[in-house]
Image (cartoon, rainbow, N blue to C red; front, side, top):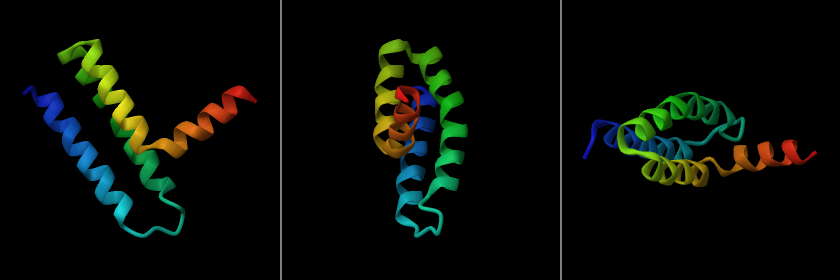
Length: 78
């Protein structure tokens, strides 16, 4: 298994642990940090393992960060 996939799995574990900790701002500050670290990580995974694995990691990240994706989709649609 490549190093980028190991780091991506650690990102998924960190995202799940961050979701378990109570937050006053509904976890948005943690979501911003996860997005900021996840986008370059997604590029690294795609570059090192190919587009199919990159899409799988993207869909996994979208399932973890579903509310930011929902609000982005809502803003795009108008």
